[in-house]
Length: 257
Ligand code: CAA
Image (cartoon, rainbow, N blue to C red; front, side, top):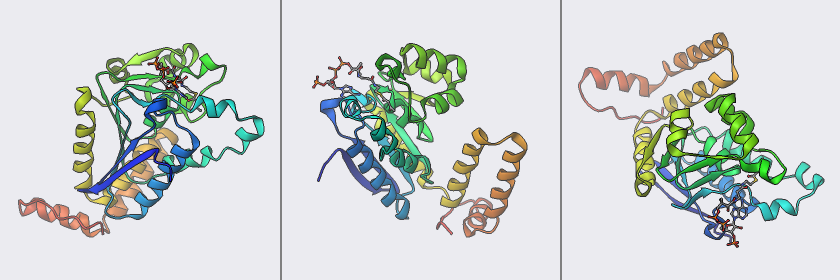
C-alpha cells in the first residue's frame, strides 16, 4: 500500500493530511492525488471530521505535478487523466480545508493550496505557477483561482513569467490570510481548524458554500443564495442552541442537527 499521504486523526474534529513524497518535494503524482481524494471521501462521510488540514514538509508544500509522470503522458493520456476526478473531489469537499504551507507551493502545489478555504503560510513559503518554464500552462485551476484570489495583474505576471513570490507578497496580494514562523505553521492551522470544528457544522458548511458562490454568481444571485442558506439554518437545532446559549451566558453545545 503506497504511503504518499500520512493521515492523522480526526482529533478534536480535525483530520491532518500530510503530503509525504520528500524525495520529490511532494510532487503530486497520480497515486498521491488518489490517496488524497480517498482520504477526503472518508472524511466527508465521517461526522467526527469537522475540518481538514493539508500540509507538506518544511521544505515543500508541493513542487507541482510530478514532471516525470507528466513527461510520460501523451495527448490521449491527458484526455483520460484520472487526476481530473481527484481535483474535482477536492473542489467539491463540503467541509473546511485549511492549507498549512511551508516552502515551495508551485504549479499544482499552488493550485492544491488554492483548493483550501483558508491558506496560512510559513515565513519561508514560495508561491508560483512555473508551468510556462516547461512549455505548458496551469491545468488544475491556476489561471482561474489565482486570478480570483489576487487579480489578473499579479496572476498574469506569475503565470507568464514563472516567477515566484514570497509569503509576505502572497499575504499582501490576498492569496493567504496569515503568515507564521515556519515551525509553527501546522500547529497554527490545526488551532484554526479546531476553532472551526467547535462551531455548528451546518452553519459552517453553508457559510463555506455561500462564500464560494461569491466567485461564481453576480451579486444579486449571491445575495439570494445567502438568504436561502440563512433561512435553512433557522430550522436547525444548533441555531436554537446557539442563540439560547448566548442568552444564558454559557458555551453552546452543537450537535450538527
Ligand atoms: N516533479 C518531479 N520531481 C520534482 C519536482 C516535480 N514537480 N520538483 C522537484 N522534484 C525533484 C527533483 O527532480 C529532485 O529530485 P532528485 O534529487 O532525484 O534530482 C528533488 O525533487 C529535489 O529538487 P531540486 O534538487 O530541484 O531542489 P532545489 O531546491 O534545487 O529546487 C525547485 C527546488 C525550485 C522547486 C525545483 O525542484 C523545481 O523547479 N521544481 C519544479 C517546479 C515546477 O516546475 N512545478 C510545476 C510542475 S507542472 C504542474 O504543476 C502542472 C499542473 O499541476 C497541472
